[in-house]
Image (cartoon, rainbow, N blue to C red; front, side, top):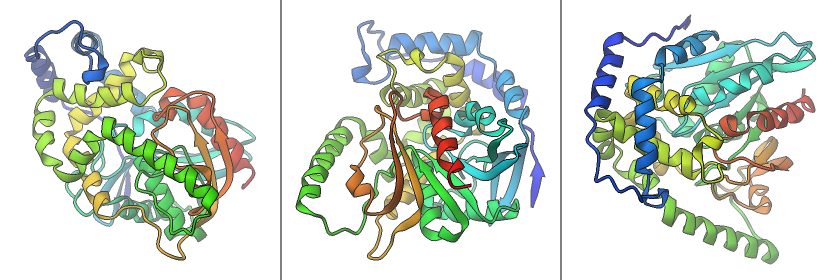
Amino acid sequence: MIKEFEVKIADEVLIDLQRRLENSRWIADDKTMDWQYGTNISYLKELVDYWKNTFSWRNVEDKINSFPNYMADIDGFQIHFIHIKSKAKRSIPLIITHGWPGSFLEMLHLIPMLTEDEVFSFDLVIPSLPGFGFSSLSTPHGCSSRTVASLWKKLMNELGYHRFAVQGGDIGAGVSSYIGLLYPEHVIGIHLNYIPGSYKPYIDLEKSELEEIVIYRKDAAEWYSREGAYSFLQSTKPATPAYGLNDSPLGLCAWILEKFMSWSDNDSDIEHVFSKDELLANITLYWVSQSIYTSFCIYNENSKEPFHLKKGEFISPPLCFAKFPKELPTPPHALVGKGYNIKEWVEMPRGGHFAALEQPTLLAESIKSFFMKLA
């Protein structure tokens, strides 16, 4: 069953948020504290002050509600999604999946770019992962990226799309890859701006390829030693940090903000790519939906079911990979090609992990260019 949905957070939730922000208890105020230690306290104080005195969640709601929002019951999961139909002469259906610590809000910039061209555009579906945003929070356990792939295929079929395109980054890249692996006959093509972190094809490597892959794995191991503590914690003990983050908007803000700083192409200034309103819209969504714990759960589930291809498994639908320079460690072309049917590999001039927010025009142009050839 699919029904219309409108976002309207109760006043008391926002009043409680304001009260908690007013009563924030800060760590020792070291003005020299830099991002190398985690979230910078000076910027965090600046952002929290803006959150208390300037930011408007109601404006975010108005923006969300300006698009057609729906709620679908798929296998007992309540799935929130935005659905915009193209008016172009040529169009194909496209489902875009977000990741963590992002949300469906990342994709709002893409909507006009992907739906309003009168010659070619998309019937666009932007869902929230189970456990995220306004989707079901009551059934996160047992819901891995592979499970979500099944839900998305059923959602698209329910909408009348039996062949469709998929796009994703971060967790969304894993979901999109699983759709291509499990349901290739339903997939027109795959566009990714991230390769799943646990991706491992079943391979017999040439010696020349092996050297390149050894370098990548060394670089990836070094990155995870510096930046990967969050992933290990969320994969193994998701409830422990969630108690504090669900209770403290200051803590939640710091936890999410640090990733937007570390993983974006921002020239050491986070506001080079994100406005305060964009950052706080996403953080406030996690707060008002109380979804930080359930958003962690997919890390735990995916750790039990890493994206390792078995002998004979290959993701056959055509792939375009858009490689943004500040993205997390990316396997080399040779390794990706062992598991995916690469048709295009695009080296982007700028951008990082949050491509839809950082460089929406570049991402939208790559998506349109690739799928126009497959339509």
